[in-house]
Amino acid sequence: MIAGGTQQLLDVTTRLLLDEGDAAWMEEPGHFGAREILRAAGARLVPVPVDGEGIDVDAGIAAAPDARLAFVTPARQSPLGATLSLQRRVKLLEWARRNSAWVFEDDYDSEFRYDGRPLPALQGIDRTGVVIYSGTFAKTMFPGIRLAYAVLPDCLVAPFASALSLLSRYVPLLPQLALADFISGGHFARHLRRMRMLYAERRESLLGALESRLGDGIEIVGSSAGLDVVARLPPGVSDRAVARIALGLEVETIPLSRYAIRPERRGGLVLGFAAVPAARSLRAIPALRSAIEQGRPD
Image (tube, rainbow, N blue to C red; front, side):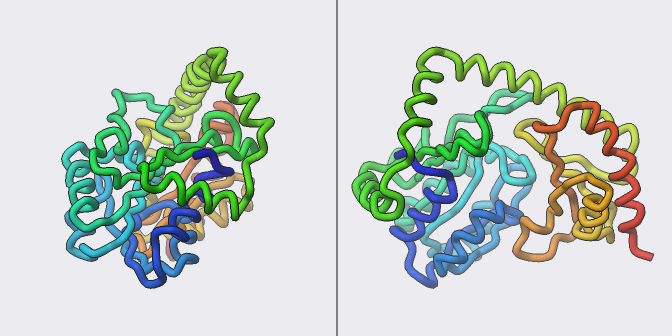
């Protein structure tokens, strides 16, 4: 199913599958765009903690075993970067099957992995039709292309088609045709290889600069894949205050607390590197260091 973005696909999902007051698992911290879609649908958000193996399925079952939907980012957890372990993938699918729940899999940037090999999509091991898989070209091509896609269980194809035809009629055809030619001609695969190499260089530059100039004060997580990393700040430092100060110094970051429903025990900054040449990353580090120093409590 082709749509104008992952947000639209999740919006259709909530309209079709959730009633007001239904519980929905949300990774904690997790993507704020998805969180607001679920909240707008009237879902009861259940924050489920994330660790080095991804979403803690046991914690989700303990908190809300009767949830109707789980929003997950298994390939690379947004924003902390963990890959959902195989054991937890199986447990998540079994929970959904047993409780007639749905799993929305947002595979937003799995094409860009720099260390090791990624696991197959969660949808690829789904044998009972509980996973709604969503991918996007916003990361691999450019955000303005506004093209995303869903791989749906058979029983949802007709309802989704009807809902999308009512909400937006159709996604503009010209970008789809151009992209189809781009893919079939082999250009997309070559483009991905080039971008993967470029982003890997920019990632290494950013990580090296952070380690050499800010290494004692921060902890880097989620750097093995994707287009950004998280820099955990020293305890007691407000990430929102640091982000605000950094913006005044012409360095744009996203506070980690923006992704969380509950207060984070340790703040952090989400630092994107894909659109930032290495030289600009290096120039930004002194400003970032100054923002962290100014953000320390008195």
